[in-house]
Image (cartoon, rainbow, N blue to C red; front, side):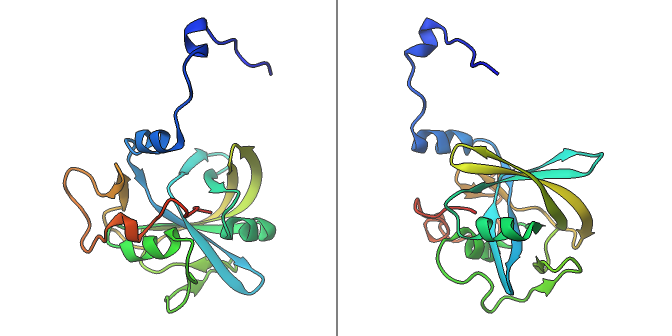
Length: 190
């Protein structure tokens, strides 16, 4: 496929800097998930906002993971993962898995799913899937997963991330710490 020709006006415009792009994309409210998997016998996982359904038949989902992340390469090797959709009161879980520091599963109550993947407690939904395809896109992989099981766990309000904060319309989840404590510029989701 050939690249479309740029007009003279667009050729003179520089692409946005990473900080500007991040700020602009923050205008799109998204849910927050934790992608979990196994690395040999050790559970691994990372927080992820880039998650969506792709197809009903077959049932496919997608998420994006940073090439430089610690967990995604380990999950990719096994080919199985679980998408844990967070509720608004799970800021602590988000912070735990959104940071590049620390062991994510230390002192955390979790179960091993029938698929052999870590399943987090009290989430809205668990989507168990197998890696179908991986597409390289810039500094991330776009992962397409084939869904093998859905688990509706609990009914509650979802965790939303908007304009660099949790919640929208002035409604913030209880106990929200400053974001500086959750994600630094050096943190890579994935």
